Image 1 (cartoon, rainbow, N blue to C red):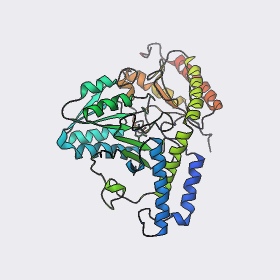
Image 2: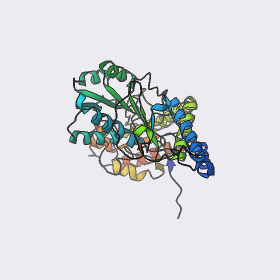
Image 3: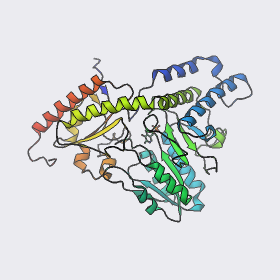
Image 4: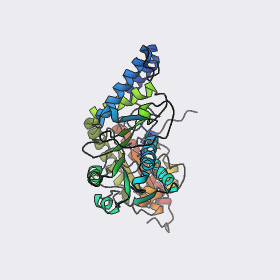
Length: 393
Ligand SMILES: *Cc1c(COP(=O)(O)O)cnc(C)c1O
């Protein structure tokens, strides 16, 4: 009954946990002395748990070149994005009600912005170029006297392109406008430096970087402080910005995952880049394939490819040997073509016939070769049976 598992090429949806991280979390769950509430500083159990939480806070802060007191623990990047956008917009509503973002953001940004629109805010959604990049000048041109916030992602989860957040951050800083960056896909793939990038708020998550699911962080600049209205009220943890008992083991896992990601980034990137090149070279031999997103301004692990001459649904059904994704995990429950590829100008049909291969720390050369073989076999088979009148060229 147990069919062999497909090859996992879906690291942009989530990564397997790094065994070193799992080990640290298990130790944390096992040690009686770490079972206290990190907020109960009146006894040794609480203080020992707190020490671990603060160590992890320092690890996450170091990985983004920020100060530990700027890190607020959350349940993941979805919550971080919501806290950043709803929190800033509501706190600063008297400064103006205009926000600038883009059409290719993650749903956790787009849906939070939709909520703000229903509260009377006005959002400009920039349309990136065909390569997925938002030009800094597009941001300058969109700014108005009543703009209070710009929110753009660092690395796009579907196509892997890297936005020039440093240039955009400097524009915002000059104009006194707050800048939020969704960096859920960045850790360990591209350097994150909240100082150099002039970022005021930055969303992180552990599970895209070999850490556990269900924990993340929001970096919030403290000097000068960014005003933020909390979403969750209660015990006043995290300086009142996010009440609730801190999950020590989750936080320890995220801290270590970030430290490893940053320490091993160069080696990881070099190895994964070589594997991605091997995959692209293999797939492009098919002909009539197109790489989606900027050719060079991109992270190593994501390869999003459109296949001409095949029907999207059939392609997805055919590739049972591979755990790949069409669009993002969060949106792929629906069969609608990717809104990211649509925003880049791909037709509905071509967007449907696109696959995102995402590679990571544990991907092997043998897996890449097997993936090339499976894709080649199935695309050739589907093209051979495609009706001659197929509108997909
Ligand atoms: C995965 C992802 C999120 C959501 O993060 P969770 O931790 O799963 O809530 C947000 N933004 C981007 C760009 C992502 O890739």
